[in-house]
Length: 163
Image: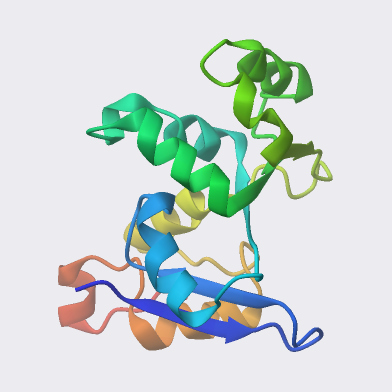
């Protein structure tokens, strides 16, 4: 079953933050569109590493069709990860197969003190039984703790909570 949870950003009621149990962004579109009909647009803010996975043909039966649909419905803002800087981003969109989507994607540089942060780091930290304090906001930590998000089955069954 597809699950989608929408939270409104408290500082701006026109902005929502969604959580989904679907890995592919194209699979998030139908439930989002049910909640937010046109003319509402969707903007995903992700790391460059995620964009590379979004565009990877291994994850699709019909990658060109899925990607075309995805970029018809939404835009992406891409943050660098590690040494993946804007020149890597521009090189990626110079490739013939990616050029047509360049106008739906923009790049931004994160401050150095947070550029190492990622959901993968948070998941790995929690699964290793370590504290995620300082990696996400206290409100997000509470949500993760209350839901058991990212914990292994063994951690959940033992009631262990390193947060």
